[in-house]
Structures are given as structure tokens and as C-alpha cells.
Length: 125
Image (tube, rainbow, N blue to C red):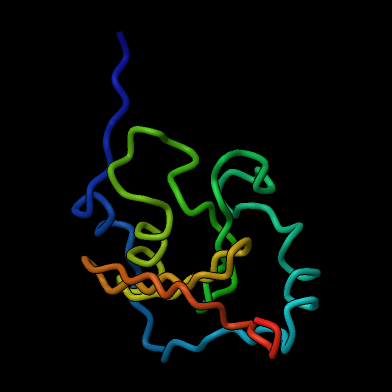
């Protein structure tokens, strides 16, 4: 019987390359229709699944990569893709936008906050 290794935060620290640049956020389209056109057909940066599984895609608001919200490559991983991405690429601090329901996920390890209101709101909601 073969066992898969579980990933923990201590395992991730060996892959970190610290950057001296100040983080910048990606520019989002001004309206939802342009956002939808740009991101709806994107693939997960890790598994390339185009969101066809039950995993929901999110876009990192710092680097622009699209990632499955939950773990998509190894189901035994204790941490989700957003947490791992924020730790490996953004010092444990990142913001993600859910492509389907437009919720914003803020990660400042070890805390996660979910902002339920959409960033694309007009007079009709």
C-alpha cells in the first residue's frame, strides 16, 4: 500500500524565494461583462481543469493566476490551493476573487476572511 505525503506549512518554507518588490494588484476590468469575458474561460494554473470539476476558480488579485479554490492535485493535502499559493508566492498575504460568485477571499496566514459582497455592483445589484 502506497501512502501519499501530506503537505504542511513547514514543508512549504523550503520553496520560498523572498522578493524585495512591493506587491501590486492586478487591474480588473471596469464592468462585470468584461471581467466575465476575460476570466470565465481561464484554466487553473495548477491542474488546467478549466473549472470543470466541483472546484471553483479564483483569480489572485496580486499576480493574476487562476487557481482552484480547493485542493485540486492532491486530495489529501491539509491546506487549500489559495493558502498554499499565498504562502509560496506572497509571503502568506493575498487576496483572491471567486470567478463565479465574485466573493473576495483575504488571506493573512493563518487567518482567512471572506467578503460576501461583490465588487461589481450596479444600481440593479
